[in-house]
Image 1 (spheres, rainbow, N blue to C red):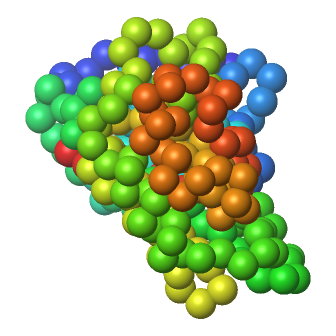
Image 2 (tube, rainbow, N blue to C red; image 1 turned 180 degrees about the vertical axis):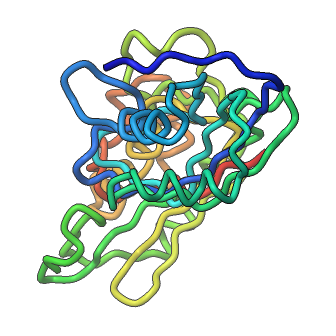
Length: 255
């Protein structure tokens, strides 16, 4: 049954920070024939408040992508305290989604349009033999990775560029493809190699294509200094493949 809003007094704007395991989910946004984070969240909110208020997510995420930090803004007339709302939502949400924080914010705050930037991290399991406990949570890459070489190559991503070469074009990508990448770091921690990128915004599949391009450089199929030329070409065919979603995490949303 569809939940319907009830009248109240003061409209409150809530900032809700969650984390989720995206392995079995089809991203954030509601879809007709797939289970998503937004669907689970709205169902939990309806259970707690008795209706579904206006809910905004900080960004789309793809099927299989995870989030260490994802921000939702929600306007409601309900008087439930932030502490009680956090506990109640966690009671009704599946184990793959958890509410970490709820706070009241200014009416102008919007989870998506108030963002100043985001940071994504891509996780690679760099071992000869795969780890079953990492399945769905990291890309298994069995061949050697020179993280220092890739870190040097990745610095070419930094700056304000037209990232058409690093975008999967579809109906949601229109207009300006210029983004400002503030940092891109490749580093190792034991058997894992991490690629961390922060920017003022991201295009569809942009991080996964950046990662795929770096792995193609690692394989010797692209030159170490090829990224500037790929950017200038503004042609998706010039970049590497789109890396699998399993290794990608939305790590921080910056306001």
